[in-house]
Image 1 (cartoon, rainbow, N blue to C red):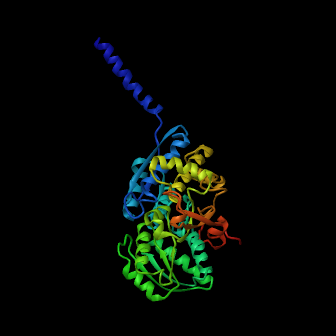
Image 2 (image 1 turned 180 degrees about the vertical axis):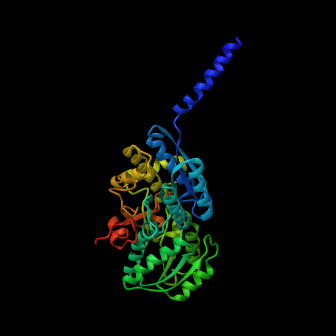
Image 3 (image 1 turned 60 degrees about the vertical axis):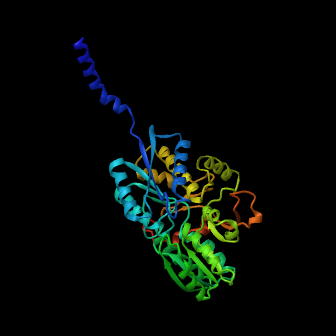
Length: 402
């Protein structure tokens, strides 16, 4: 009997490596988000949900390997974002990171992606530098950027008579880029920038900044901020009588959840550029319904874009029959994006996913028929008009005519 037990133990020892070899290693992707801070409502847990939905809809496996989604809260801090990404790459063999909302962290992730030769999908950060001077062969800027925001909202407001501007700007890479891109649009169309002031991220009190804007006598107060910073500055601008005094607010980056947080009484009439609206057509409504069942809220453009970007990435792996980043990127660029998020979207050499954008407006309370019936789409901005033309690009990956 003892001999049989010894033989059995020996056999199990020999078979263990074979069993392990037959179990495929998980294919890991990471979602790096703001879970509880200023940008958490339009990225955050909802973006992780969107990525998980895409993985489930794809079938949960790619090239025979189970897909595992890791997620982390980077707390809107560049050092935490970079450290977590490096840990994922080095310890967990994460193959792709998708991020939500923070341009400074996104630029750090872009550089790390080049170093590690790993693909990064930017679903929420805004700086157009990601596809301009800081472009990467492994980075895809998917949903929107500061160039599109400025050429949507900034151009519309300036052409409507808003020819003098004062900016209240979030004091980091995103805000600086958005102010710069919008100021260029204003001046190119005959307007003037009368001044600007920089506000720290997550500012609770905008009174001193709003007083400076009011004193400037500019026709337009441009809010180059986002998330709860936008909500706070709009609320306080109403309290200070900015719009009642004749000045117009230009909210340069607004999300669906900002309008929800403000309420239509305060938000009505705000015009802004958006990359997705849940109630735009039957396809967007179908996705939104499924998302709402999981998240108990309608998807922002970041959350919808994260689903689309993840699905496009996974399909490219299958088409390439490879997990090698260069092969995947080649398929992603060669394959148009056609889903509920974008029609005939194209990923250019600079990493910009070009798709139509929308000029949106917050409804009046009397126009809303339900809790999430918040916006109306006033115009479609074609992708080739929304994004920086390659002829103006500083991206070294873009071939310039000799």
